[in-house]
Length: 328
Image (tube, rainbow, N blue to C red; front, side, top):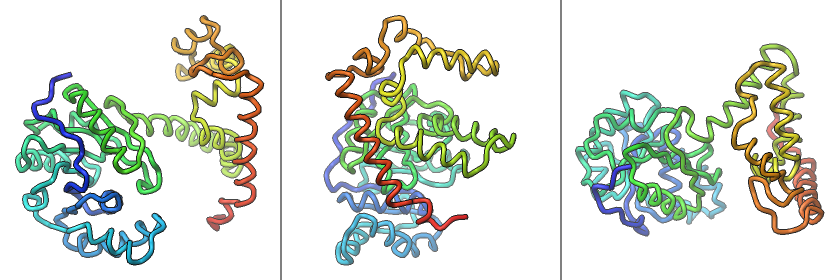
């Protein structure tokens, strides 16, 4: 990692942020920043997108549970500007959210780099492109960072902070502090195809698509299986803590090895990180140590686990969220 070529200061309270790209994600991101007290300039060459911003942003702002007067106040914190040179003036962060096309993003970043002082952070909301590719024509690369929101960004409280070889560690820390300032949780990862979240979720989705291709299960059975088994556990605890709470590491390793032998698929092969836990006797909650360390007895942990899961499943049954969406 290279050392930063500029002084990285904490995100200034109420400071100016420029969001480049007024499409769906740019609209959401600009609204989110305005809600959290930042002075926002939304930039796009398409005047029609700028003109329709307030109309498109109003329902987004309404999800924050604010009254009409507060919604108007939030939206008044967003100015629109078609000229990039004007839009970036005074900004401490310029956040790109243009279309997911490498050549377009490269052009925008080259222009942002030329227009902005070197102490301005340049960020991309890319969901699939590598930050190093986007920054190919950027001279001051040490101020470039991936800040990727998960749709719907104003509700899902996680941001991927994507870094690369030229990213100073202090800029990653800056990204975490910025996420804190808008009540989001930052998860940092080095650039790689899919980053962190898409890499995980598309591993599941591509397998599900294969099941659909092969006709091994129906649409409704697949969704019910995930929604009422895997889904609630992941929502409460995430995959690694779920594994600790539900099953012995020895069993996990045995299942992965069995699937590997049956399918020959390298994706199922037991990994070193899991093998190391098994070798050390760290079986999860039952042994007091797995991916996590448990501070109470296994019986107490199981009782609390079961209470949380029962409460969530009761909520799902009572609300019936699938029927509420009125789908067939």
